Length: 69
Image 1: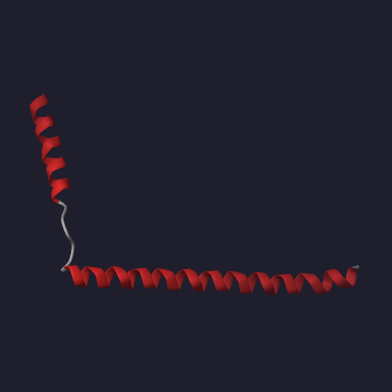
Image 2 (image 1 turned 90 degrees about the vertical axis):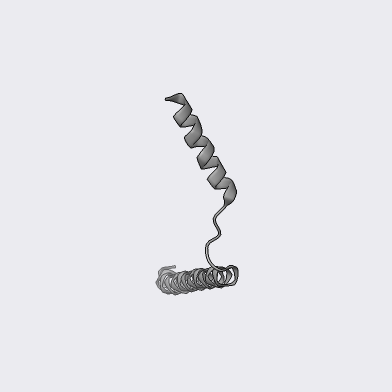
């Protein structure tokens, strides 16, 4: 039983390190891909698109706030 423990712990450590490395590399590749996709979409759309509806909401809130004064 002691021999199995001496063999199992290093093997489990190696498997855990391999799994951790796999996930770290996978997530970093996903992050890089999402940043590339974001840059590509900004390039295609000509940059940041401001939302007219958010401007209307802000104007309405400001008007309501001014009306309360």
